[in-house]
Image (cartoon, rainbow over the protein chains, first blue to last red):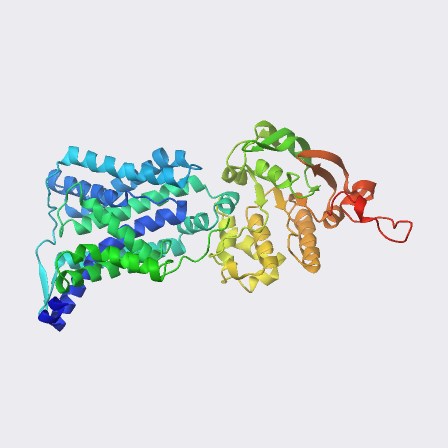
Length: 300
Length: 254
């Protein structure tokens, strides 16, 4: 309390915090989006989602800093790589688990996270690395409000990706089929939608979104095998938004990102890292179904 | 000519044997019906045909090809449209999108024409094409489910209890549509029903199932005159000596 009073609120400072909160929240939101997509379609929770982001960041690092591909080539190459990894994960690890208890699937994805972190450490080493991007270092000065290019790219990139996903799910045949399969799996089978292949595609998309998150966040935070732990905060974001709602994932991410920034400045040290979970607990107590309540209760 | 041929099918739910050696055949162009009480295994028969369940034993021939055990999306591509019990529509897709999904496996450009055809059959759906399917009434959802199955351009349609939970007027309407689809679209129908009267009225050939077995089969005309059927499924019964029905001896309430 003393902190807040001592500092006072300055309009510009608040704005500044808001911007960095939004950009951090976008990253949480993107990872949360990956959680929700897989959960909606297959009713599995993939706890390795954050580690997929880490993997995406490392692939981007390899393509750019090691193979020296230009950024505009490395970006799609990373996404493609992660899409393939996502689809293979579904095909080889998750599909044999169909019909097993949820708990086993959960343990499997947690284990997968451990493996990914270990493998990444073995390949790329454990010391933090930085990704060189064409937009690194620049800032925009809007009357004293300073926005780094990296943060701009995160915000704009997330917005563009959300628009793309919206159009995909709303207007393409495959997108509609994914919705259909998640709304009623058996009926989707009966109309001839190859549901199992659709699930692989969902994993591919989810892993690609994580890859985008990884590439976007890499210039602001360093890349190391443990960076995937933000996945836990993203998981909190998904729950705050209402697990099972795609807009909810982004909104939840933004809330947690923004609160974190403000807590970091106005509250005693340490609160910044805890604030995500405080929000999560508060949300679970007040409105357990999340902001955007999942639309339908599960049929028994 | 039979389009579908089941030989000695046995299907299990875990350790429970739901179908105990069922053999039947569905003749092309006809409406075949399968009657039976709750838990007789009728739905399991349909699920086994469409591939949602795998039989432990036995063969299913569709147009002479063995199809037992293959996934339901593949049987759909072969031309078997399954309209499941309880009208499983896609609740958050619009009516139009539901119908479009019905044609997911098709690659021709007559899909739009077929959607119009479905609206022809069910004019009430045409006015609600932008509405999410969850907001339709039960009867309309059943129509949508049948329409969506038509979009597959199936040669065989499996209908699971289309009359379930509908008013008598709607049941009559659905029955009429089934007959029209059978005649006009040349779709063979395999109808599973508890509403024996409706089923026997429109069907050509019928089977009666009890606890996993076929206990009777004949043309629908003969079935509807058989004493057992009249008593147990149609509820026709002579009055007793005192001018009252003797309920006690009825073996089942269906």
